[in-house]
Image (cartoon, rainbow, N blue to C red; front, side, top):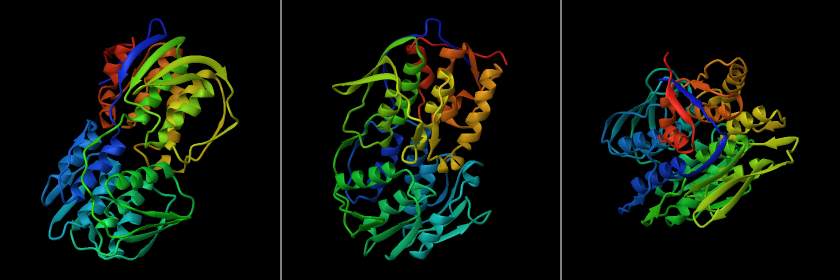
Length: 390
């Protein structure tokens, strides 16, 4: 389905209950599965990525299809390798089958994992036979995906002698690795990160009740809306200054292009400051998911900054650099926006209707991957959303 999106007044006054973080939810689910004692996770993400992970973790043997959930695929690849005596086929969408997994598989094999490629060498689907993995010092290219590193970290304390991970080359998305280690620490796991080496000794996860915080990646689209509005007062519930998520860097990025943000209890208030002091160069190596809302905002404002640190974006749901550039041209031509089966394309381009008038977004269901209530929340904010006749 396609939606036509517009906003009559361009003034936004609303309160939004943001979705919970799928990054935190997915890590907690793996910790929960590895923990010997049960514990409850409150406010789990309702994103498709988390739903398919829950289904996968509840399955004993057989085929697990994780659709297009990249983190779920990587985390399960490592986790299922440790499930002694169980056999799985781990597969997903066509896009998942195009995303490289060889680096992670090679390392798991070096630890004794029994993993075979069902179709193309280096790519999903995988046939995994769970075994008791050994411990050793491993080297991993840290410039490919932080999710590979997080997948290994999560299982590390359950190995007989733990794990020593040497990170080679430039490390991308460091906040996501830090998030993994911080969550593990909450559940009793101690680690040492010295220079480019992370050491985790064999330990047991300690159960505790936990509530998942709201998602800063989803909040980024509301910063874009605030930035492009005539005036606004947007209250985003569930955010705090003590967040585990690196994407709260959005506070600093959008303060440069006219968005004032104020924490009040467990909420964040967004208002217009109209102060522009944009840096000439912005490095997103730690927070690549913020690229699209930032790029779309700069385009709409007719502002320019050199954005660096985008190496991993070609391996996402789409090649996000190319797809974003392609669709910005279509905004100018007043053509409908293609989403490339990429949730962040849909959510980054919808706010541009505040500047360019009514826009049509194709395949609106893609938001289910991370933010199922996105279109309903836009209506709360005063956007007019209607089905396209096409």
